[in-house]
Length: 67
Image 1 (cartoon, rainbow, N blue to C red):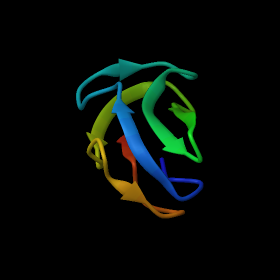
Image 2 (cartoon, rainbow, N blue to C red):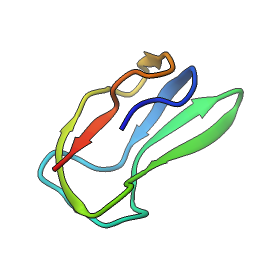
Image 3 (cartoon, one colour):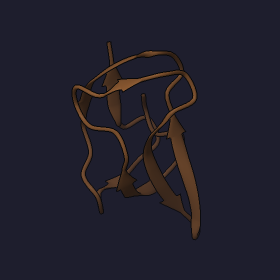
Image 4 (spheres, one colour):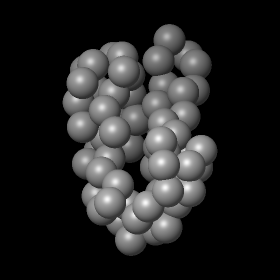
């Protein structure tokens, strides 16, 4: 999962080892005072969360990996 826009990591919902299904929220980003959930595109296990709360992301930055 990669950032679609410049944003700040507001909240981390999922953690490595968590089982998720399609549509589950992994991370919440904030941009222009709007909260933007990063949604799992399919079912799987969270292999890594590659951001921390407060990180400033650029478009294309890695957020999480599902396996």
